[in-house]
Length: 369
Image 1 (tube, rainbow, N blue to C red):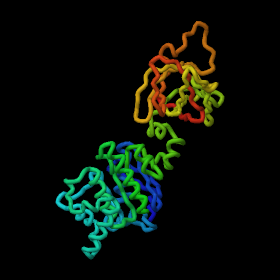
Image 2 (spheres, rainbow, N blue to C red):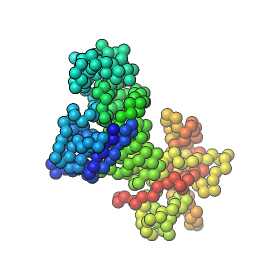
Image 3 (tube, rainbow, N blue to C red):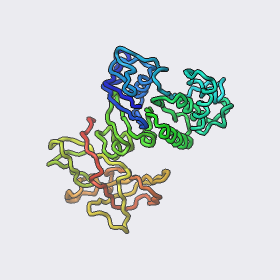
Image 4 (cartoon, one colour):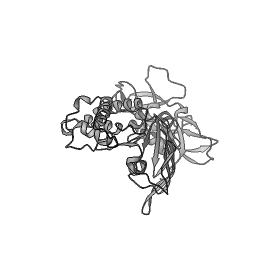
């Protein structure tokens, strides 16, 4: 079952929170609405669910209009399953009774029971059918809430920050299990998150929102490797930023010349590149010809990688130094971060060669200071 959103606009009083939202979600696809707090992603999810009245545009599920300016189908008739951030389990009902709660449209109690047990089986919680929510861990409660959402065989599943209340280690495990369940069910899924890593793991596509608008839509690889602007680039990871000026379609930087097609000469730009693109070569290795001297300021061990703080000269690479000039890397210079996928026990002050492939840098208009 597909979900189509057409020209959605929404406001609370004078404040517009959604503007010109157009989106289509295919059966079996997981789409993540990603963005900072206040960008409108949860409001959009509530409009799909029918928890907010649509003001402008239309929403279709499987080519059926469920909301526009003239009609607002009741939430319980839309065929959507909703997994809330706090799970919203009833404390006085057992796991089985909680799961059966969304099956009121099924006349036979035994049929409701069987469908609920099948849903619990999907999430490996059938053995806990007679247990009450307070006897479960946070991860188990999340799986019961997912079973309750899946039990009525919804056309669309909506998830609102479903893992935010779990600790970091459990979050990784539960979202992996949840993804397998969602993909095996074949249901179209829309999930709200503010966590880029979570969106990249869960989403077949990511819809990145900012100030009520969709900034970029695409696969995780597309948004990470082909960002359309500085906001998208910086949202997915820390970046190194060097400011420069366009001359002759290029920008001279301390790391080399960067092509800057589409910018007029004299335009101020920001050169951005991610720490993992920075390559470090020790003294006993042969670096690329375009590498520049650098100094290790500090190293910090992270899970699966080492973060290296570097300093390089601030003058443009290839620019002759003035007579009597002291290299900037002996003073302040430019501070860069590199993320090396291994243990990198370099001492402070170590001299290295630094290289950044020019095809892995992004050029955007400089923001006003």
